Length: 325
Image (cartoon, rainbow, N blue to C red; front, side, top):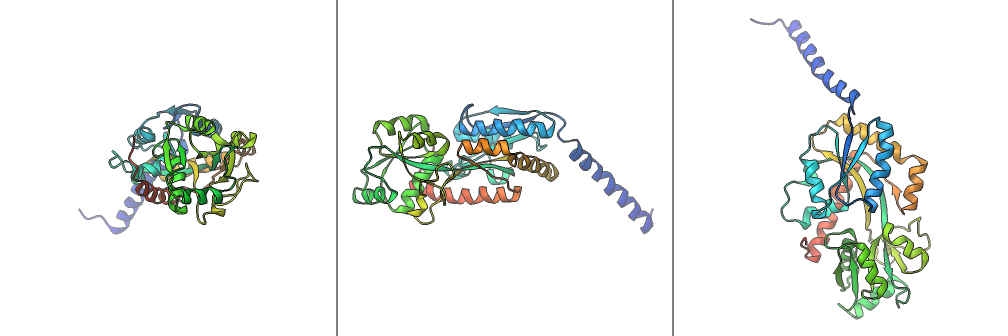
């Protein structure tokens, strides 16, 4: 039987409207149950603090509880894989950070492709790192440190929080761009590295601002420079590494991802609500106390950030010849 053209168009329109209704209803109903936010770090760390701070505020805006699920291990890859394998329905979130960009090159084989399998949702915050030395150190500027390192290749020791960590990457980028040679001493976390820095077992360290800011403020360690392209509000009297090594920039950042194929309208809703949380004066004040600034950007902008960081750290990982522990 041949269907007249007018009748065919009417049926096609009805079919199109019918398929659109579930999408609209899904968007309006979301979220209908609690959300799970998976974090690849143990409770109590800087990243976990950020997630719980944002999660509490986000719960109020969404009308559903945001449950933090800490799954540390394998350099955050356990958490990432859990989200990659979760349903793409907007109910499973991932804390995304520099480790995810670094791991894309650091690990030769992963059961997922981060850039392909995780959809970017929103940025959260950005924070500089700080280059610290002992108060008794002869180095009072980055220029003095570079000059000594060039005159004494391989004699200085610089601590890091471990292979593939942001602190090691910051040091590696510095080594590559400044053209210096020092010994990288990886620890199992920043805390034991800071103990040895204060004790004189190592001469310097690039440390996250959250971990190092109080040492810099109370004078128990000397801050030579921050690692962002410009000075940090939290340490306004401390210069930037870029003042001595043009083009140098390294910072820690956090954001949110979901499984790929999560509906665009759900991603848009999450982005809108997260950016509203970041605009709150109380959140800004809490971030300032951590030495961080809000990062309210679109999903596309956050995706560009992840891609840029992945390429950037790929070069450093290859330069250092790193392998996971």
